[in-house]
Each structure stands twice: as C-alpha cells, then as structure tokens.
Length: 368
Length: 204
Image 1: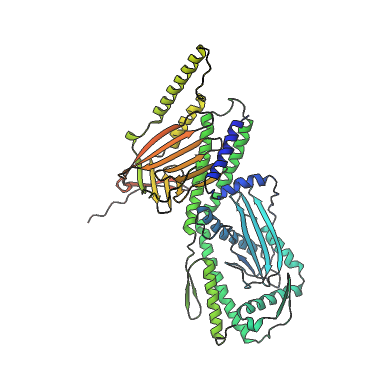
Image 2: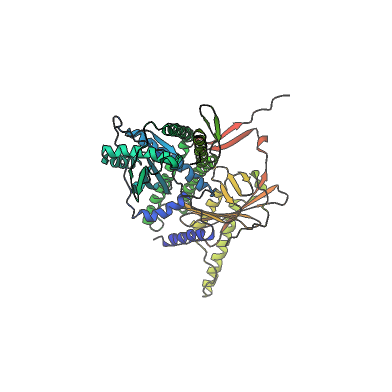
C-alpha cells in the first residue's frame, strides 16, 4: 500500500491551505468538486430543438452577462478568468438560442432591464475547465419567475469542444415554457413588456397599467395606440438596442482573441485531471518495487504540474489583459456621438441615463 | 508559519538574469555529498551493531529515493534564464522552459490544485516559493538579491517522503542585457520557444 505517500500529501496540502489565504483557483474548486463530484449527477448534452422558422409571435430574449461569482475588487488572475468566462459563456448561450431559430432577437445585456420580454440571468458557481455549474434564473419583464435551475456539466473527453451543446437543455426548456402559453398569454407578455419598459422610463404616465402580484401580473389598462409618448419611447428603446449591438461587436472581437486560448486551457485542464486520475489508479495498484522507478514517478508528476501551470498562466495572462478594461463605446445617434467609458455595466447605466435625459428633454423636461 | 513583512522594502528583482555556473552548485557535487553522508551513516550503524548497541541516529532514507530526489533537483533547477517582472504589488519570475513563479508581495498565498499546491511569501529578506506534488515531493525555492543588485541567488531544496534530508542546490544568476545577444526568444503557447534575430540598427 502507499499510505505513507497519501497521508503526508493530504496533510501538506491541508497545511498549505491553512498557511495562506488560500486563493480560490479553478483548480482549487476542482479539488472540492472532486469530492462533491462523486455524488453529483451530471447533466448530459441533449439535442437542440431547431425550428425551420421562428413561430409568431416572436419573443425577444436578453441574456445578461453571467455573474462571475467573484468580487469586483478581486484583481487576482482567477477572478480575471471568471470575469472573462462570464462574458464567453453568456455569448455561448446567446449563440445557442440564435441557432435554435425559435426566437426573435437575442441580445447580450450587461444588466437586467425591461428592454426585452424575457431575460436569462446565470451565475457561475463552479468552472474549472472540466466541471461547469451554473445557477440559472429566467424571468419576464414584469419580474415573474419562469423557472430556475442548476445546470451541471462535466466534460467527458479532452477532444470535445467543451462548451458545445451545454446550453441546449436550457434553450429547450425555455421553448417548452413559451410554447405552453396560449396565444393570448404570449401576446399579453409582449404588450406587458412594452408597458413595463415605458413605465420604467415614464412612471407618471404608464404606472398602474400592470397589476403585479407575488409571482404573476396582469395588464389592467392599455395605452392608446396613437399615444405620442409611445412613439418617443420606441425611439429610446431603439437607442438602447444600439448599445446592445455595440456590445455584441465587442463580444465577437473578444471571442476571436481569447476564445482559442480559453478552449485550449479547458482542454488542457481536463487532460491533466484525467492524467492524474489514471496516475493515481496506477499508483494505488502498484506493489513493492514493481512498476516505475522513483525518479520516473516524480518526473511525471512534475511534468504534469509544470504543463498545467504553463497553460493556466497563459490564460491568466490573457484574462488579466482583458480584465477591467472594457473598451470605450462610441455610439452614433442621428445628430450626436457619445463616448462611454468604464465597465460594460457602468457604460450601460450611463447610456440609459442619457436616454432618460433625452426623453425628458423631448417631453418638455418633466421629471417623472 | 510564514509571515509577510509589509515594512521591509522589497528589493527590485526585475530584469533579465542568467545562471553563473562558476558560482553555482553542481547537483552531482550535492549528490556525492549525500552519498558520502549515507556511507558514514551505514558505517555508524554497522559499528553500533558490532558493539551490540542500538543505533540512535536519524533514519537514513532509501537510496533509490535519494538518487531520484537528486535527479529531480537537476530537473527543477534546469532553467538557465530568468525574467523577473515586479511592481509594488506582485513579483513574477518567468523561467525558461518552465512555469512562472508569481507572488503577491502583500501576504502569503496558496494555490492548491489536484496536480500540486503552490505557496509563496516574502519574509522581509527572501522571497519563498513552495511547490508540493501529489506524492509528497516538496520543492522549496528561496530568492534573494545581492546588496549591489547584480546577483540573484536561487536556493532550491527538495525533499520527498522516505528521504531524511533535503537536497539543496544553490544557483547564482547574474544580470544580462538580452538586447546584446543578437537574438530574442519567447515562449509561445502553440509553438513553444520561438527565437528571432534582433533587427540590426540602421546606419546613421
């Protein structure tokens, strides 16, 4: 038996953790997950339900940038990778929804709003290159909960495209909820979302049209079709769409630059984890002096660790370079050019404030 | 327990460093010293046995593991070139053909993983790194800069379960200017080590 090997290892790993501030690295989480993983039931990728053409009425969906699950002040490389993932994974979900061809426009948004009838919010609970656990919440623009669930995927082999198909189940479930609604409910949702957006912009004019209960809502009054305020609000809404389209361009650029390294890292992490598991099985079955020499064993362990760290550091470097430096966004409206700086969230907030100001000016400066 | 020293200014280690073999240990010399120590230990045990006394000294450790640790020391101290980046917050030691040793200067940190655990801290005089591999091999590096700033000492100690003493290798690095070499090499993710010649300075 190799108890003399295992015990000091466990003790030293524990003491390493106790000595310092034990940064939560993806691989750190992986070791926790290894214990939890034995009891967890992992989801399997299911086929995506793809339509020949979207059915009417078209439902627009917003995918919020995922919650990275780390503090905004955390400048560690691990946190930088998580923040990067929060965008990459949100983009992957958006791509899945678009590919299903079941929906209207699917947009990435930095934070929730009533811009679209339905929005998807997800937080990264675990992401270590092999295991991915996300907490997902789907709500409509009026705040009613559609569903929430935890998705948990374990990548099966290093050759896989790690992210392929992982959002199929979510897309299919969303479709199922949408299709379970009758036509009247579907149209009511679209109308309700428009009123909710108008209500957020001009509560004095639009509040009271929707009656909300704990997890439900009902339209009690509709604005007049020829209400000029609705036309202004529609223009403002289009300007907000413009911002989302600009984010999309940034996202595509980021995926081009970071995507290959990120996928390489996921693949390398999985390979290393599989190697370690095979190695541990071999070590457990080893007897006496049979098998590898001491040096071969040590060398193999060191080589695996070195290779893992090189891959990890390459990703950290890239993630840190991208972290916290969202590019300024330049948005051209009909007669003005706006330059927004800061994080995507703050740029989005600034832009929405600007739109609100524009709306106020157009409506004669009345403070809602 | 390692502690960080916020008051002691951290000397600037940044720059390019190359190993100075004349001032560095040879792993073979260290291994020979270990063998001599093992031989002395065996002699003492034999003499104790001849006298009918029980031997009270420390356990010797097995020779296979001792040789393995020595060869590992050679492997771990292989990088001949270091490139150090440092700011007020962090130091990062990039090592040729190996992973970088990176540490925040404001406290001790640990990064455990399935494949090994890493720990580092600044003790007021030296920068410490420890790497623990799954089977219990522990690699300890200590970096200290000379007072004149021209040398960097890397003291590496390896230990493994079953070995009584550390295998220690000291490597001394001297500053060098990479632009004077006529070529520059960088580690890339997809192509490994890539070297390019320096562009000749245009004539005035």
